[in-house]
Structures are given as structure tokens and as C-alpha cells.
Length: 400
Image (cartoon, rainbow, N blue to C red):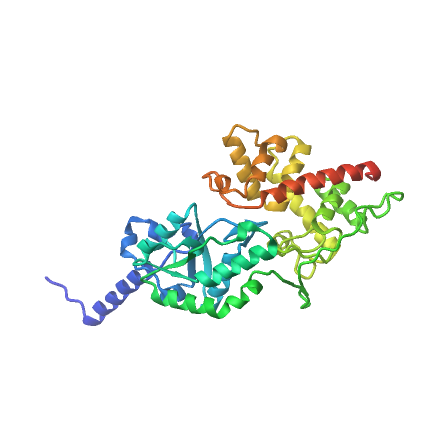
């Protein structure tokens, strides 16, 4: 006997199937860990244009590591071009997901395959790809990077000629939207990439660094106005208070209102995400006691992270380096040291070499490196400067 379904039931089943198909066509979020276009079923997924990006709430940018493009610092994301595309994403109501490649060929390949929406990096314009790719913002991005390079006297920021961002040809609405936005907002690029910190009271702190004497009064054994705070919290992380004082001078020159160009704040220069991680609120971050409390909590966490380094004095070097650059970058340098037969638990003449060279693409593009580019020379100097100043403090100021 044949069973017949009422038409209204068949209609409901059809709608459910349509809903399932519609849901599965959308891109997975960060929980998947990678773009769904990497799978063999990716050919069935349509490439996203602006309406789909807005509906999905996420734009995927393809980029390379570099100071002018994208990098991580103390748990925060930076890069001139990344910060610009962040502002564009806000204007279309989307979040930004970053997919970092190792070379420009991979960038274009991923773009064409639908693994990302826009190449937010100055790739070389190729006539052979103009049927598949729209190149845009050549004038705007090139002019901005050239200006920043001259202003900061940093040749690593200088753009190469005949380069631009890229969008697929089958995303014409995204291409037009991004092109128009770039033209309208190019005068704001400097503001978009200059970090300002707003306190809970509404005060805006711009980058400053007020230099003071490294020793307040040697005859009385006073390094700074904040010695009692350093002594109080040094106990909690097991460090010599004079080491924390040496670090504080390196961070802020004992200026509790200091703000770095990267957005680090206060006496010990806590980044916003780090401050939240160690329980220091925005309203507390410029308070010297709260700031040092948070910094010593971070030092304790890093001490645990590097507990496998059994020599406590050696471990200090890694903690300082990780405080400056983030543990991910230091762990990358240790991985390279291990790869090339150096001791990953020893700083001088071993790991410090790879830290020092981590701004070079032949190092940060190696497969063992998970966190990419960073200014390793600054981290290298940071560790050495603090160790030297700590030695000087120990000669002229008593430890208790």
C-alpha cells in the first residue's frame, strides 16, 4: 500500500532541506581553525562578495607578516595595512579574520581559490592575472606607506613600486566598496594607525616618554619614587626588587602616565589585553601600584611558562624577552635554536641569535615559526639593557 504525504508536509520538508543547504554554504568560523575552502568540497562553495561577507559578519584578509602589513606584539595585533582594513571592516559591519601566508604566490592562489576575500598586502601587479583579480588602492596605500617610511626613517615600511591590494574579479561589489572607501578615507590612514589610549574617565593618552634619572638618591639607596611598590610585589614573583626597578625604567623611565606607540600603558607598560589578563582594569592601569601588581603577576605566569629552564638566572632572560615580545615569539626563537643545534634553554649565544634575526624573512618564514615577524633587535636590546642596569643597581643600592 502506497502512503501519500499531504502537500503541506512536503512543503515543510522542502523548506528544512533548503535551510540545511543554506547553512552549510556559509563559511565556518574560527572554531574550524581554517577556511572551509581548503576541503575537497570547496568547489561547491560560491565565492563571497560584499553582501555575503556582511551577512556572514566576517571578512577574511590574506596577508604576509611584516611591520607594514601584520604582526603580533604582546598578545595584540598590529600592522599598518591590517589596522587600515580593520577600519574598513567596521564600516561594513564585519569582523576581521587573518590568514597569513609565507609568500605572495600563496596569497594570490588563496584569493583565487576563495580562501579569503581580499589581499591586504601590496602584491606585485601582474597583467597575466587581471582577468581573475582586481588590483586596487595602489595610489592610496603606496602614498601612505611611503610617507610613513620617510617620517619614521624606517626603510622596512617603504612600499615596492607597482604593487596594490587585490580582490577577486567575481567580487565586484566588494572591489567597488573597498576602492571607494580607500579614496574617501586615505587622509585618515595616519589616524587609523596611530594608537591612542582612552582612560575610563575620558582622558586620551597619546604616546609619551618622560625621561628621569635612573637613580633617585644613591646615598639613601633610592632608585625611584616607586621603590616601596617594587619591593612589595617583587616578593610575589620571587624577583629582586632592583630587577623590577631596572625593568620599569626600561619600560617607562619611571613615568606612570607613559603610553607607547603600541598602546602599552603605565609604569610597567601593560598592553590592554595583558592588563585584562592579569586583572588590572582600565581605570587602574595608570595607577603605579596596580600596574606593578599586574606586571609581577605576568612575570609569575611567564616563570611557570619557562619552568623547564632549570637555571633560574637563565630563566630571567627568557621571561624578560617574553614580557617584551610575547612568549609566542620567544618560543619560536627557541624552536629555531633547537632546529639548528643550539641550546633552547640558554640565551646568550644560542636563542638570542634567533631573536635578534626574527625581523628577517628567511627566519620568520620558516615552518617552525608560528607567530611570524617581530622586531627581535628591540627584544635583544631590552634583555641586555635591563640586565646591565640591574647589575649597576646591585652595586649602588642594597637589596633589602
